[in-house]
Image (cartoon, rainbow, N blue to C red; front, side, top):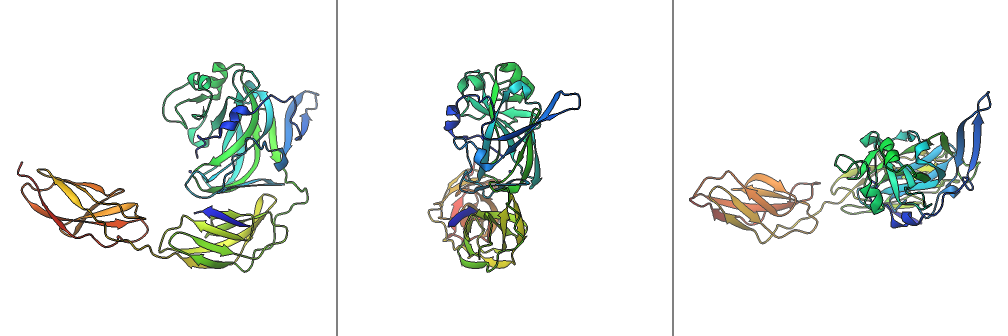
Length: 392
């Protein structure tokens, strides 16, 4: 099976099916739980073991360039890329009052870009999910809901300002005060979308409940053998295709450039995309099992092909006394344009629109433009066009 993967944390666009999550269960259905009792007999903490089969499929939001593997030492999570497909999010049943959630947290070993805790919440006590409260490390103790939240939740949010994941946010204490009937239906995590990160969640704590994780097969182990036969099968300006020999017992594979995860695959091939043109990469592959990657293969080197730009056409400038406002036609594949005055580089712009300022009055300037894509030197310059600034 071929996997297409792309080469740091928002969760604002949760699918609308969240609103259809029904009912507060009276127990964690299908999830093994054990209550830890103190010597005096008083209930202390509850330990809950979550397996991949316990994930709520209706809430799952692990996309094409997101990867989740449940192992006996935690959940392996990886995302690759900068678009909306780079997201890994899963949830499991965890019915409790919002007032009893304490300070939710997760233990993460991995990249600086780490997942946030998610609480699927019924805010009005009718047994249906109204929004997901999102807690991300970057915002400290501030929790926010996305635009897909029920309107009454957004209207009743403790704060309506910037500086958080959305304009509707507040501390958990403030949310509890604003919605005293609120209950959490499901707990989970989300890495992404639009970021690259990888690591292991060893546990997640919500209130007095500690969620730990185990794979589908209790006998699952971390691979001890590295894939062999890693080969570059093709490359172009932004994509390199790889293949390798399967490792027995592997659940999936991570693809690396150096020490960074740049892809994941459930088969023995992958297309690593989003690469820079005319750039060298050192790829290796590791088998994944029990939530962790085994040893990496030997390195295979690949160089993406250079991108050939044509010179922009349609250059026009409007003169002012001390400035020229210039435009040109866009060039396919370009995401940056370099501008020249009398053959000397003057500046750059993301689009073929540019203001050349601080010029002398009544003076003629030769203007030209070249296309670029931030990964190599600019292409050929357009023909120079002379424009004279106004006298006043």
